[in-house]
Amino acid sequence: MRDWMGISKDVFYDPERVAILPMGFCYPGTGKSGDLPPRPECAPEWREKLLAELRGLKLTLVIGQYAQAYHFGKTGSVTDVVQAWQDRWPDVIPLPHPSPRNNLWLRRNPWFEEELLPVLRDRISEILP
Image (cartoon, rainbow, N blue to C red; front, top):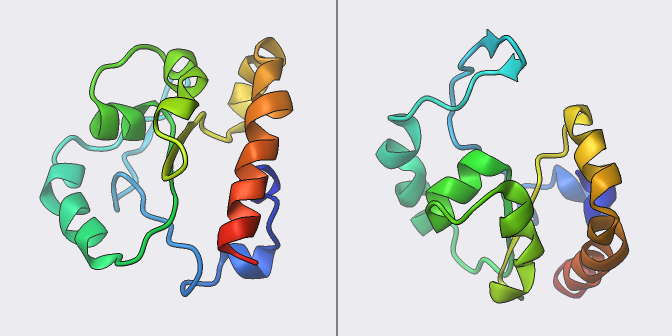
């Protein structure tokens, strides 16, 4: 993820500069093809409360299908949502999950690394000089 953002480890883990807010605070376990989805009661219980405490947000990265469904509703596949990234620019950017399991998705969607990531990195460098 840090590579996609173009920032150092120190910046990524600095809580004064970057907030990492998962969809669930408990590990849901593993299934046949990886981690199970976040538990459905988690985000409605606490997510909006925590987001309200994060004042002065300049950019929100909405990462993966579960976060995208929560924030945007049912708007299509991850590919559809990420391809429409300009619809929410410059404050919100949907991204695929940066899992090694998505390497096939990255190979099938070269526009992501060619078009979106350079713009994302420029935006982040504006916010986190």
